[in-house]
Amino acid sequence: MANVCTAAHVKATLPTDALLGLTLQPSTVTAAAVYNYNDTGSPFFPDNVSSFCNVTFGYSHNGKDDQVLVNYFMPAPASFQNRYVSQGGGALDIYSGVASLAGGIQYGAVNGGTDGGFGSFSASFDEVTLLANGTVDLDIVNMFGYQAHYELGVIGRAFTRNFYGMSEKTKLYSYFQACSEGGREAFSQLQRYGELWDGASVGAPAFRYSFQQVQHLFSNVVEKTIGYNPPLCEMATIVNATINYCDGLDGKRDGVVARTDLCKLKFDLDSMVGKSYYCAASNGAPIQDGKITKKGVEVAKAIIDGLHDSEGRRVYVSYQPSADFHDAQTTYNSETDSWDISIVGLGGEYVTQLLQKLDIENLPTLDGVTYDTIKDWMIEGMQTYQDSLQVNWPDLTPFHANGGKLIHFHGESDSSVPTASSVRYWESVRKTMYPNMSVADGTEATKEWYRLYLVPGAAHCDWNDEQPNAPWPQTGLKTIINWVEHGIEPVRLNGTVSLGDNAGDIMEICSWPLRPYWTDNGSKLECQYDQTSIDTWLYEFDGVPVPVY
Image 1 (cartoon, rainbow, N blue to C red):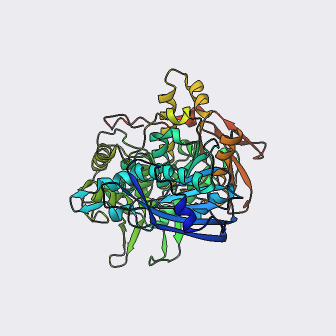
Image 2 (cartoon, rainbow, N blue to C red):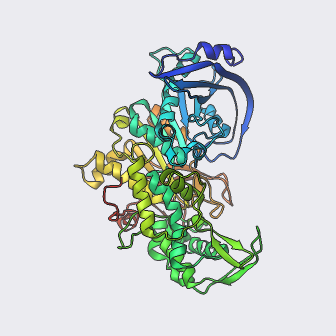
């Protein structure tokens, strides 16, 4: 590695003609060898120790006074296995950091990340969205939406070939690995440039950006509409009771809710009214000692039911039973000895910056905001950013025609991106690409190259402290590599248990639309077809005037 990890070698192997309209900047090149980097505790890669060449350089768009920085982690030549991986970001970050980029080194892959042209790898989208009050920087929106990752991948593949001296006849496998916002970024590439990718391992993607971001405000508006701001302990007790009741509905009691669909059908939240709760004083909040109220249950039920407009028409999906009510968190007000709504910043800032075009980090108040307001914001954002941020195009024909394989997974107890949003997209792809097939035949045709897994008990892009025996697909990239390069079809996806009594165990995860059920006293997993359960995941958005894929 010492022979190639030099600025001189990087400059000599920069792909000067990789993409029309870009000019690479050799003067910005840095190259630093990193030895024995210890990566532990990642949800997306097994613990590993890796060595790599950390390469950074910039480029500009011709005719513009700008700079975009890209970062590539290059395995030692002896470890390189003809693989390139783009890594997505998270929340409002387009760059996922060293831990994510380093993880793919163990598979002999070059790993790429971009700063999106935001000015640095530490800058977030919201810091550069507005040029001034009233003016959104649409170039930055497009870079965040899809363009920066397209350029990262095109440059990265060409640079990888040059750096390792690959012949044109040698296959370079191209992958995308990401979750959450990074998952949205991954699908922005598969939907627009599918012919450039061999495979992707994607978790909990933030599809339908306007719906997803504004959805974060829905729980706050539920509290405001009902007129009740529940103490944190009251909602936590409801979650714990839900987990306890629904744990065994999959045929196995292990502290993991694997069947949130059955939970939705069978658990009566009204039974919680009058139950006691207690939480010790912490983080500025006093001791919470009380009983579950009728209004507290009403808040929980409305959040789980999802957004409907004033005419009762469905607008979007919400979180599954057993997910914590993170968006509904309240703040204790010591002056009034009461609980106040805490407006969720991801939703509030989306509205203030990208819709109202004001340089404000959050909505100052929800006065006057109704369910119809939330609906209008979702639709306005869809109209405004359909071509950049929305990312829900259901025709993946170019990706499929290229032989691409896709693993898509989502925690059933995700409290940030609704799990049903992933089900809706998978079903949209099936219906769009196989319109003349029966549901059964279209399902099998889709699963030949695109598989969706709902991960029992898992939280948002991670293991779940509230369900510590729940798995998470820590080896997703390895699985997609094996499917693409060796034809090993992941009929069931392996998930690693990281916490709890079963830490270190590997659990199998069923592929949608099959649902898990344990027989033989919880010793044998069966993946069953249960139409009643499946129907709980499927919704008609009759409150939106156009199709929402």
